[in-house]
Length: 268
View 1: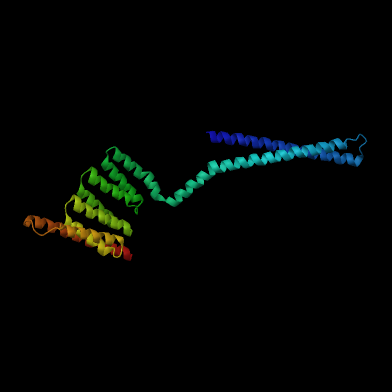
View 2: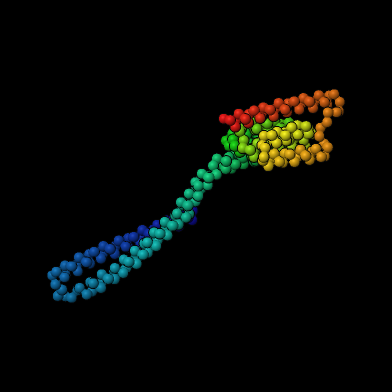
């Protein structure tokens, strides 16, 4: 409100200065015409000295009005640019640079986090899924969904399935794909107690991203498990062995399918 009041005051001052400047210009033109007429007809009453003095005075006043008009006009334009035009340009530039990801983060994901704060975890999951659809290359919505399933709903199986779905639904950049695989291995190992599946996934990282820090980190993790002697053994009874074998077969089948999808995306 104060900004627009300031605009109005400056605009009125500029208009008033322009009127004074224009008025002095007309008075000077009229005075010049009278001086020319007197010079042609003669000046028996000796009016010219006073009229020429008045002309110089009006020229000085008009010059001052012109300077004042320029100052006020420049001030109005400068303030309008700084307070109105520049913020609009900055906003448009930032939106162009940041793109849709920032809009998703500000709108959809903020709503999802609000639902989480209210304890509406299923509603938050749906909102994060919407965010993932709007910004497919942003892994953050999937990360938040996994956290909700694991920490809030205590459904590690759903968390694992979410990561699998995320990996299969998009041809991710290397860093994103590796992040999901490490997170998947962590869930299997620390939550499900399935070290065998975690080892299979770490081996997948080594094979899929050779020569990268992700491969090096996976190799280091495998070495830690090997040194600790915590690798899954084949013992423990026929029932346990059958369950572990079934889960291992399922994981191997999933990893093979994931590798085929990645190769297909890479060749597309």
